[in-house]
Length: 215
Length: 215
DNA sequence: CCTACCGATCGGTAGG
DNA sequence: CCTACCGATCGGTAGG
Image (cartoon, rainbow over all chains, first blue to last red; front, side, top):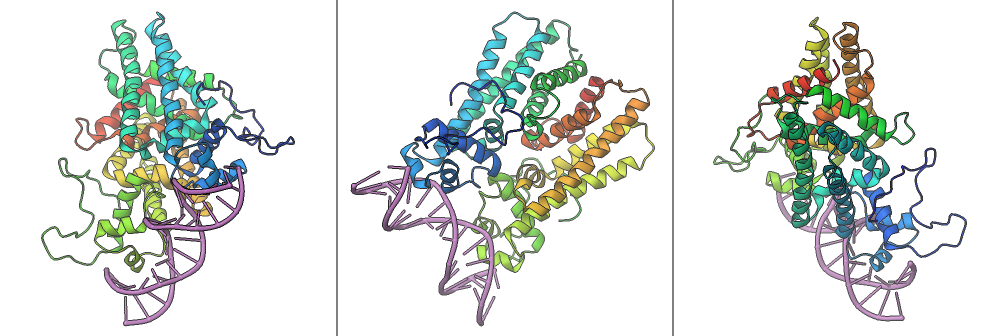
């Protein structure tokens, strides 16, 4: 999976089917992407260390050992899921920072965009947030670095808000950015696609809260 | 461990020693509390499923199998750590709700009190937040119920703030309480005892942000 | 708290 | 993608 889905799973359905798992038709071969998607869901539910390759195979209707026809290792699956998450974040930041919208609007667009990403990719995000720390040292450090860069985008926009006089000068941009990202990442803990607030609503309410809070 | 420590680990030290692990004197027998404390730290670092009983034994200078002289099962350790966390929360809520402080002050006291609990018990809180979902169904549901009750305290105080006219009527107390608890629980992800902000500072800045944001 | 051990399960491979 | 399998490790127990 390389480009983020933009639609949340249809409400009412138990979950998006993870691949061609006898949904009526003949069972086709699984693709590598099917394996990564199923792994995202499994890791989100049971954690990386709580998921076995045999569990994952079960979800796809094949044996654990057969997964190695598609992938090199279990850790590679985690790496791919987590990389998707950070990349989508950075793409969002690039997109928003490239505009010349007023800074308060940029901040809002970052926030709303982030919530929409989380909502449309709940399994990826849950795995990203909870399990990235179990990556091998080198990859984990790279992820931390990219996440810091993403946080930097928030700090930059917050500074622009201060410079424009929209936000009070006494704020600590670093701390506010930390609060904001904590808020955004936690969305995957409680967001339900069948709830009565859309991702955009949620994003707006977070933006309202914070923009008022630091004015 | 039954009553929460109120002091964070001394800055500069690698970590509070988990028991009498040859710190100069003769190695005494470990207590059950030593085992629970060491488990809290290990689960916080590697996750519940990423920690083996042999790992835990190593930290205490004994064999994995010897731990069963102190405890009944691995899951029992997790249960005890998580129960500590929720209980401390509920005790805090009881204490604050019993006062007749103005509601905005009650909210601030809840927030500051929570951050102080997190900061003084980082390992317990990290394990609580990240690993409670791996408890057996029954215990997990009980924890969720108690956590909801704690969140109820925030909703109650928020309603009082609205009734007093301190907070605008248009807020959704449920959503604001969710945001607040997300913010509070995330403190254990980035708080460092040797940082330049005290737990009380952090709590105040969260209270400032939210109280301004919903005024 | 150790010795000695249990059956189950783990991630992964060779060969087809 | 399966068969058949590997060595390592898992949580836990009996007996002292």
